[in-house]
Length: 340
Image (cartoon, rainbow, N blue to C red; front, side, top):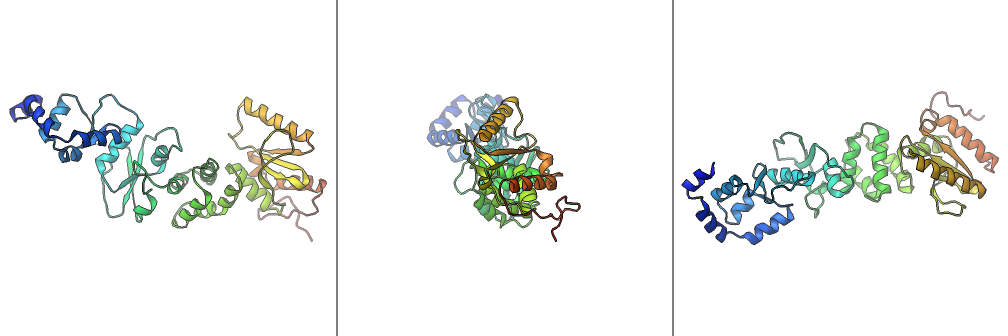
């Protein structure tokens, strides 16, 4: 509808002024402030504005339509949050951000995803539109945080959604480990949420590794060391994120304090960069001066070479006083011989 049409139907400047005088602008302003300068058509009508007044605001470019029935009251404001919230407001409740979209609202990630992800109640059917994914869930109230604005899945549900979307087991482990070690969510919360998700693609694996994550494993590579090197071959249990006897406060991935042996597990990208390599070398030198030996394992050493790594770590432990014996794991061709 053009501005001329609005004036012809009684929606010109004079009518607009009268409508403006009757409207509850205080409530509308509060709603817009809360919603990143966005308001909905329903909110406008509830505040006393007319359809003609809304159309006049849009035609005169005082407002800008950002999604069906959603208007930006401060033209020029932009950003992922504005676009995402406009899509949410256009669909209405019950709806909540999920997955990568929820992670962005929680501040766990720093780049908003191009495709928006939502969850809604099981009984509701919506047409999501381009670059929007809406998943219906049976227990909507359980997975959505009761107080966060805009509505989003709980931290635990968000992490497990992200893990479910991972491309591999290691990527799923890394997602969970990152969330726990950054104190975004507690391991026990993830265990509880996993108990409600029988169909999670990595559920069984994550249940196994969450205890290790809770004890300090910070990456998929560290989990691999604990699971496939240490535990699978009967090595003594190390202390995760262990302090050292060196002068500076430096934590190590795994420490066998009784035997003064430290194990660092460097993932494929976790320790890249010259500055990090210099720091690692300094840390190794300091622990050696303090009488502790540092063994540095890379990604292949905890995956395809896990058995060889277990054999070498066991030999070092035995040289330093361990009286136990490693045993072969279930992998075919394990290099550790079977005793007896």
